[in-house]
Image (cartoon, rainbow, N blue to C red; front, side, top):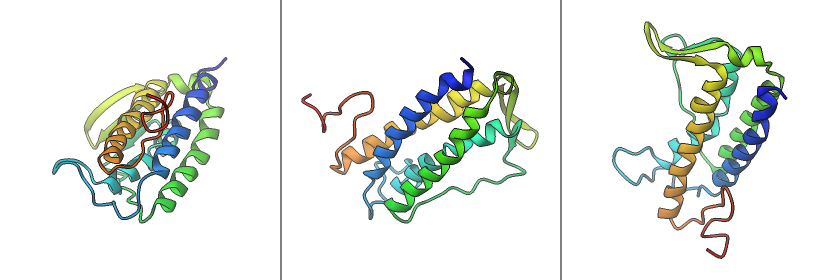
Amino acid sequence: MSIAQSLLPEFDHEFATLRKTLERVPDGKWDYTPHARSMTMGRLSGHLAELGSWLNATLEADELDFAKSPYKPFVPASTAELVAKLDDVVGKARPVLAAATDADMMKPWTLRQGDHVMFTMPKVAVLRSFVMNHMIHHRAQLGVYLRLNDVPVPGTYGPSADEGNM
């Protein structure tokens, strides 16, 4: 089994779970933030919806230079737009992952801001840390935002306190 084929079940599970979470982001709460230094719910949920596109940026190039490609965050106007963005991103990312060879996965990838190199790692490590773990981290943050707004939190690796007999 290839590296990519071994990652596909995790990709499918984590992004399906993300979709359940994003479906619960309430319209009208885009400016909510639990703390002055926290992202707004709109910014955080938008970031989550676009994170899968970083898989494409990793596998289709050997570096990302923010000095050459300025980052403009996606901020949704509605929950429907948020979920549609995620669906579009996942629909474009999954086939790229499925087609990746082991040689593709082992090639080095660099994140930089001009001359400042933030890191260089094999593409598989970038996918696990910069894409998947990064998304899981922020999805958990969004779960806290939902909880603080009395929105039932979906289960992730089994039922949540809102969905099961816990």
